[in-house]
Image (cartoon, rainbow, N blue to C red; front, top):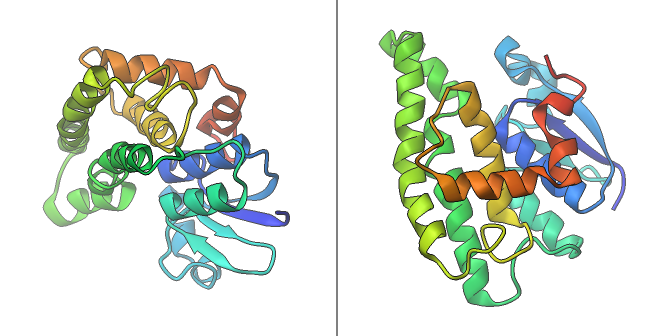
Length: 216
């Protein structure tokens, strides 16, 4: 797999997920930044690439467009099997998807930039309101996630066993976003431990927001 082009933004947690997966798979790619806070993702040039106007978007060598971070990551896992990001057995795969979706489908969608912006523009929310909103929905998701991870025998060094995978990718990206909003992580020792284990790995470090060419 070659000639990959990743349209993304350094601070986007969904972009961070895909960057981690690309690094874990050892894939090289062209990095194309779009500054979300400057509205660059809504300019005609990018909308002609991705009509949804969201990041990330991965363009394959033949021009095929892939969007939605979980779909992109599973495509990479199916076409570049090593190292695997999902377990081989069906139950394990379901568990990892469950953990990943608790973050990617329940926490992130209500806390992404366009929702936070809409809170301000449509409802007059101030900075403190937005921060409290973000923290509330993280805690709503992290409380059950912590309980599941802490009580499950399938949890190891990482979310599922002793190798990182899809759930860990989502966890790390969310914890990174949490830091910008001052989310208190003391109630989540298992999540914190897994995050630290992931951040000791080169792929997670190289993909981190602060290490991207558009980092500010």
